[in-house]
Length: 207
Length: 207
DNA sequence: TTAAAATCCGAACAATGTTTGGAATTATAG
DNA sequence: CTATAATTCCAAACATTGTTCGGATTTTAA
Image (cartoon, rainbow over all chains, first blue to last red; front, side):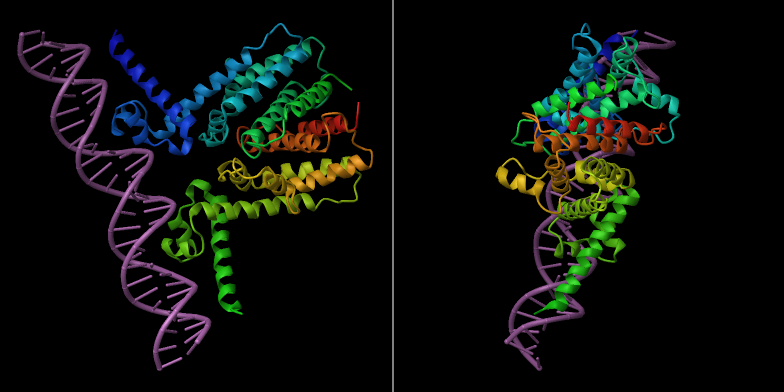
């Protein structure tokens, strides 16, 4: 029972991650160097390696925090809404998260080290996506509820998995474009987003 | 009239870009170092700076080539198709380009240095997107033809620009997810893509 | 042929991620 | 309480990166 040591260890670990997050948000991912990170919390660069094995591990940990925040943002929408509105709302939450935390979002989906899906057993890949507390898992559950309630029409070759995939690509395309190629784009795109989501909803509800 | 010199200059410039493209395709963007690049074409790293001002310029030039190839892929679809099918086909071409050249695609939309839209006059941003020979310009033209032919229904707050934006986000989301988070995903997603594009088409065609 | 310009490269510089060796501190055992 | 072990921390060094500098070599212009 050595809680005192480990508590301090954990606290320092968190301080490192917090500093990393701040640097990324303020100066971009390129400015995240081990020395700058160490300076900010009054450590030396070498000292960081007692807490993380590499810079990649630190970035991966920040990404994991981002996934949790994304999940939290999507989980915060009223679950009492009817399925279609529920799906609409969590889609908007996904987009809003990307617009409010573009550095986070881009880190998670572009800068991040690619999870080695190539050799991993596909069951593990499946679980990582659908697991509890994951944004994609929440999406799947919401759609499943819509199917159960008869609000979404299952067609041959377009069932739960395909619906979830389609919904994800939809909001991801919006989020990605608006945080990269269309960053600072002058026009207001919220109305178009609404139209797109509305049309998608209609597509799920049947012919 | 000093064509001999400039011809050689241009040829070397192109050799540098070709080598950069090969390295990125074979070993990823992270493996693109000035020394590795110089080695491949029997130059020294310092010599490259006679042809490009920085590594960023080289990457930007490779991205520009990628944009041209993307445009060519979309331009290659039969323009005689009816507007809705035409739009469908260039959307598939966009996705296919991303799947066949994921390194290229990701370089263009994530690794690439962000074009400084912040201070540029918005007219220039508009021209860069809509200009002749640009993929987005081709998309806009196709949709304009669909509107003119009465195949796509213009609604208040959802006109040409919004339609083009929506179409782009749609295929971009698919292309981006399948080249990053869903790379090596075991399931076949082509059928779901078809469903999504089909539903989008229906949305454009009216209530 | 001579002067000027364009090419090309070895060497060096600053900054990066990481390793190493050991000093200082803290916990555990006898 | 002491001695041993484990943890924490850092200065220094290493390899690799993008880039600059000075000069040598080659090509063009006069």
